[in-house]
Structures are given as C-alpha cells and as structure tokens.
Image (tube, rainbow, N blue to C red):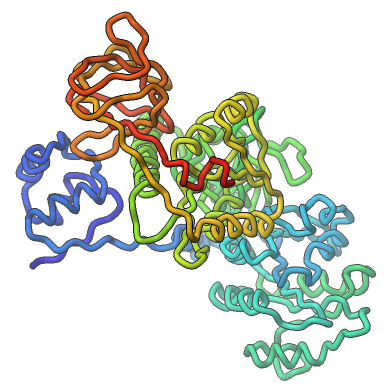
Length: 595
C-alpha cells in the first residue's frame, strides 16, 4: 500500500500531484464524494485523507515545525543578506539584551533598578506575564532590554525572548543557586548560540554563596571567568543597587566584541513580541526591529495579518515616524492581531496588494471556521477520556499561548482538558453562549466581561471565572478536573429536522423550514447542523412556528419553521441538510449546579 503525507490543508492541485493523478481526475473523484471544488481551492486534512484512503493510500499527517522556530529560521535567512553587504551600508546598532532566570531570582527587581520604575508593582503576584521591551542609556550608549516572563508556564515566550536577543543576562540568586528554569535558560542560550553574562544576584543576603553557584555552573558546562572559562560573571545586589553599572559595562564590552551592525537603509524587518486588542485603538502589536527602517505609512505584513501603519510609538508611548534596528516599537494599523513570534516586514505597494490581502483574509477565515468547528466537534465527541470543556479568553496572544500550553498538558487520572474555544480580548456574548451549549467552563485571564456578555451570562446562568495569575488559574482548573473523576456526561438527543427551505439569513441567525423526520424538536433545544454526517455549525432553537402559530415543539412527520441562532460561526445551511436537537443531561459538569 503506497504512503502519502498530507498537511492540515492542501490545494486540489497539490493534492492531485501527491496522488499522482491529473487535476481533472482528482476534481471528479472529489465531486463524486460530494465536494465541489476548483483547482486552486483548499481542502482540509480529513477530506483529503478520506479520498486518499479510498484510493488505497496509507495516510500520514505531515508534521509541522514549531511556528516560532520557523519564524526565527526565516528571519535568520533574511538577515543573512547583511553579512555580504558592503560596510558602507552597515552601521552599528544598539545591543538587544534579555534577562532570563528562575522565578523569584530577582529579574524584575533588576529591571526595576535599571529603569528606575516600579515594574514589579504592576504585575499580578509579582510575576512578569507579558513580554515588554524598552531602551536605557549607559556610558553614552543605548541598550535595548527585552523583558520576558519568569513563571514556568511561559516557556515558549522565554524561548522567544532568548531567540531575538543579541546577549542574554542569566540571573541566579546567590543564596539559591541553579534551578530547573535556570537549566532551561542555559539550554535555550546554547541552542541559539547567544553570548551571555552570568549575573549573581542577592549577594547581600546572609546565605549567599557565589563560589557554590560557580561550581554548579561548571556542572552545567558553563565555565565563568576565574573558573577556567571566558563567560563574564558579575556579582550584584539589585535591591541595594550594587554593581549595576558594572553589569551594564560588561554587557557593553561583550557587545563591542561582537560588533553588532545592521543595514538602516533597507525595508524594515522585525519580530512581533506581543499583540493585544485595544477597545479604542484596535489590534496593537509590539515589535522589535531587526534590520532596516519601518516608517509610518508603510504597508506591513506579519503572519496572515496585513495593514498600513497609521501610528507608531516608542517604548515610552511617544509618537514616532520611524523605527530603526534594535528599536522596540508599538504598531497600530494591522487588520487583525499578528501572531506573537511572527516576522513583520515592510512590503512595497503595488497593484496586487489589495488582491493579496483579500486572498489572505479569505484563506484565514476559511481555515479558522473549519478549525473552530472541528475543535467544538472534538470536544463534544465521545472519547475514552472524560473531559473538562473550557472556553478561555486572554488579554494578549502571548498569554493565550502560555495558557493553552499548560492546559493541554494537564491530566487528572483519566480527565483531560478540552479547549472548545480560545481567543484574545474581552469575553463576548458568543463566548457565553458557546460555553453554555458546549457545557464548558468559561475563563477569563486578565480580561473583563463585555456589557452584552454580562447580560447574557445572567440570563443563561453561566458564571465566568477570572484570574490574573496563571498558577491560580491552573489550580482552579485542576480542582474542577478532580470533581469530575466520577461524574458522567450524557447527551440526550430529541429529534431530527430535514431542511426543505431557507427563509432568511442575518448575521447571527437563520430562519429555515423543514420536516421532522425523527423524534421531536423542542423550543430551547441545542442544535447541531450537519451535512453528509459532518457538523457544519452549532446553535440553539430560539423560535418555532407551524404556519403562523408559535409553538413549543414539533413531532415526527410535521413541518415547521425554526430560528437557528448560531453559536460560533453562522453555518451556511442549505436544503437537504439536517438539524439535530439535543440537551445535555443534568449529570454533566459544565455550567450547572455542580460547579
């Protein structure tokens, strides 16, 4: 049996090539199976896999590398051009530094001392949970600092911070020594081949033992100056402001040796550090420029996000017209949130830009709709594991990434977490309704409830839970997982409606007519729209009519009209589609009294 590897989505043309068939034959096979497609249209993995297996192929899912690492690789490739550029095109740029280390070893206090601000007081629980970037002056030179989280849940974000830095400061508490996160940091530094300085903090504390820590570093194959190695080491007290100048001078010395340069004249290229949705200003992204110059009015692309820069701010919030290499900058003008860790680059205006933007948006909308419905379907499907369904919203994409990472790795006996939906921004009305219909817990991480969502959650008796500190969030989830170890979920199916006509479609609902072919439909039921046994949408039955009369139920053989109020994307229901009505048993664990 021949093997075939398939990605998450694939164009019909590429699918035909992998099947070693003509495009026309492949389209015919797809049409015979109910899929009307064109040569450049994309189909998802499940569709392609079914067709391939019918043709006696053994299907394997194509593995996709880490998106952050892919972005780094692409960025490195783009920047390699500068290595061959004439010296006349290159200028010295500020060094980019990140401070990494185990939680509570004093990173935020050190940054606070350097900036003379109260960063620590602004963070919940004293833990930095966002990436930020800013610049300071030392000895007449500029140093750019990228601040990264210290809690273990933010491993990916710390890796991203290390990846964009020129130099790392590894901070270690002299009275505590090397910890698991210290080892992880050293691993990231070695992997990215980043020059670094060891910073021994808290040397003023009674239990401080610098020599012991140097010995521990030697065990990790890190030999510092004075221990037979060349890695610079500085002993400080961030709290007492002791030897901070020496630390900055050491960083500048390493930067001088490395001789960091960039081409200021080329079109700007950078990396998105963070992004969030501002209610007044729309999508807001924080980036750091790696090469070239990004200017106000430039057309930019980051991942699948496109836009024209309408406003830029420096790290102090001051409006600027251009951002040069190593400069952190806030960018407004993207059409949607760019992914954290993605490359942002300036593209030249041409006639194809509008078409390019339209193609990107259509592709992302299609993939997003398919992905969302698949996740909901998987959450509601029967598996060998019991599930704690969760809808979660976070304040930024970086926070969301961290939350998803830790939640998907949680397991309590045979209970696992299923993330029905996740997103950035306030909890909305649709989030509340989705939590209701999918029997999910609704969590907000450092976000609030919108006004309309507040009204709906009261009506639907869905009680969102809000957290500012990740480990408090995780503890709550684990507590709920423990509660359902012996709890059974049960879905009760009521009836099936075959669609005969479409009467009206609005933004959030459809009015359709049909015949009840099985059981009965009851007003208020949860609904599942299916086409060829595949879920195409979820919703609820908010109104039902027989002729001109409002009714509360319709039984087998009767014709009726119903209002399908969508939860999530509004499905494009067609004639001959089927709608299944059901309720969740009171024994289930989502938004009922067992909470």
